[in-house]
Length: 430
Image 1 (spheres, one colour):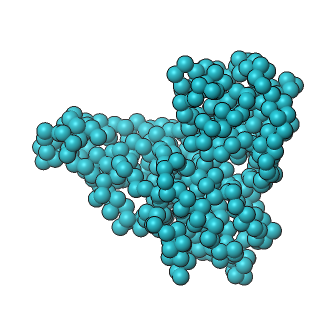
Image 2 (tube, helix red, strand yellow):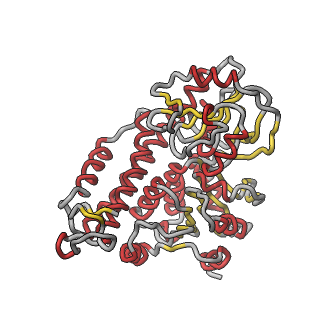
């Protein structure tokens, strides 16, 4: 950790000064890192929104102001830093709102759809990441070529947008979360287009088949600076064709607009005692031990509850039959990690319908934690005053014990426990 006030290695790890000399302590450093991680996540969403024609001067101005606040000898005040951290959460809400609007305006109102998972015979291209513009442009350029296109990871929700789903050669989905890509990309015989994070350094077995876009890059890889995908298409034609291997069908696409269309039915079902609780279980997946907590938690939820999920964290919980409730799947896949905006809209609508606060709803949030976008989404929830959120499986390493204590006292922020069942029982008041 680097102390950007005294310009030395952070206190306690080699800095020759003390907090009393340079005015810096680990809590200020912690809040600055929390702010910087939040800004990175927010800018990811704002970047995607800009590519869809959505910009906001207030969001851009906040980025400048917040970064300036982290410059050497600008701000030594803990409360001011906490204010900036929460303001970052509100700005991220706006960025996610813009991205949601950009997706809908460009690709149509989403709706639930059943998709195939696996492969069909013929040449194919696998698209991973988050950028729908790249996917749309590739679909246009591969029309009539005999090349099939598949989504991977966080691109799965693309199928719920009618302007993307209308392409018959968008044939399905292949693979799971980002950390499995080395195994999955090696098995997929066609080229892979990585549009954003999360891309890993490739194995030799598929390095020559990995293509990236713009700032997404790997050493020695083919990076597209424009969306002329001719070399990718040529590579697909030269690769070994895929074989028929459909492994399952799944229903996705429960965008917030689709859920809110059913708001009246859902509200009445809660009043009638048909729905006991809502759980939001999702976020960013990872490879470290302990993430089976989320699958254990989801599988133990009551049969009269709904589970909302989003982000690549969904891959931890989706390989289980949760059954149905009110004729709907109990597990409702809302989309990408940025579709946390939609989950917020659903919660706000339900709170309005029941004339209560979001914190008074029968709603439990269990968020899997990993990277900067997860930080931004968490800051949004905290900025909105949502309390009792459980995050895990590990505490954020860049948050000092005192700052985490502040967040716990202010927002009842919790860490996942050793037992998913015990945590679930606590949420249910058992």
